[in-house]
Image (cartoon, rainbow, N blue to C red; front, top):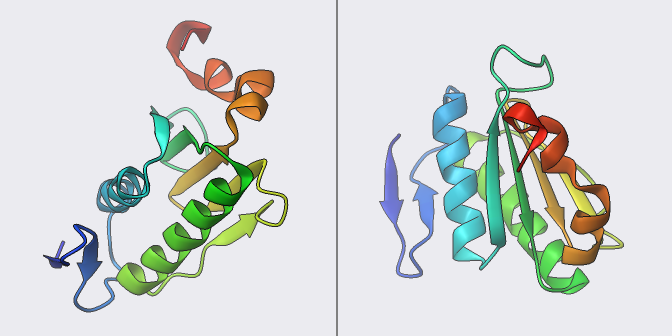
Length: 129
């Protein structure tokens, strides 16, 4: 992936790469979430298990405001790096935001909401997180 590191540590594509692989997109997503101080980041490999995407990422933000801001920045970074427009649901409330990039599905939760739904337990091998 052709990237340059900005002074903030963000990886920003010099030119959009619409042919970015699912693994490269996953790396971009994980970098973005880490830069924005997401907590308890979990990635689930969906290859061969589901047709919804290749990977799922689940993480938490400390507040509704942080969840919404992280999600919005992630969608902007993906657009800048790939030229792709991601689908986003739930940003207005900031409790649970779903971002569908096509290859990677991202769930950003407030901790209480994440604990209630326990989404990663449904997808992790053996049913345990």
